[in-house]
Image 1 (cartoon, rainbow, N blue to C red):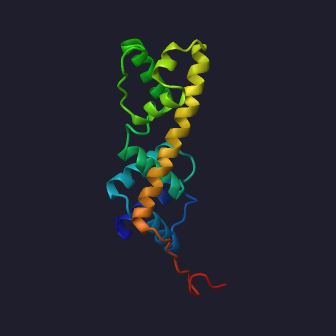
Image 2 (cartoon, rainbow, N blue to C red):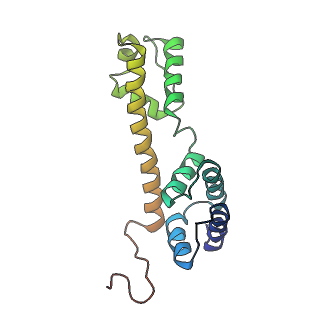
Image 3 (cartoon, one colour):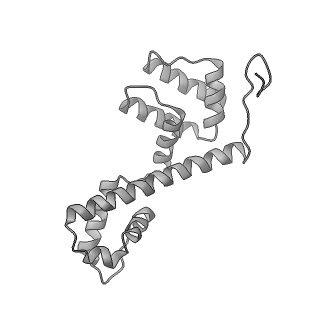
Amino acid sequence: MTKAELAKLLAVLAASYPKFEVDDLKVQVWHEMLRDLDYSVASMAIKKLIALNTFPPAIAEVRKAAAEITNPGLLLAPVEAWSEVQDQIRLVGSYRTPSFSNPLIDKAVSAMGGWVELCRSEEPTGVTRAHFLRIYEGLAEGEAERIKTTALLEQVGTRPQLIPLKGGAAGES
């Protein structure tokens, strides 16, 4: 995304949130942190955040929303993932191999002792469900963070870049 495209998105945020002020430094920092995103994806992410949030988003929230847009199956809601597990228990049972739409569901099932153990569990359904949701949510958050970090490292290379501040070189007091 170009700096001009980002400036348009920041103008949309400023129009949507009266206390969100745009200046040259904000444009520079936001561009540095979001320039690897496709403009159309960033625009959709900003629109989604405006529709859902009372306060203006942080850069991290824009990146997370963009990751959800570009990887919708990967960041399935925990309750939807549990619903898929229940469907597979009913459809294939413990003697066959389930097929999940999302690799994180497989990881969560494995963390609970595996497919056969989950199917044959004598724990009350509510307890098993709560345990799965907690595990899956942690995995999804970790994956979202991994996606954001990977994109950021690809953007800046593997070394951090300092943004020079007005009035002196970066790192000077």
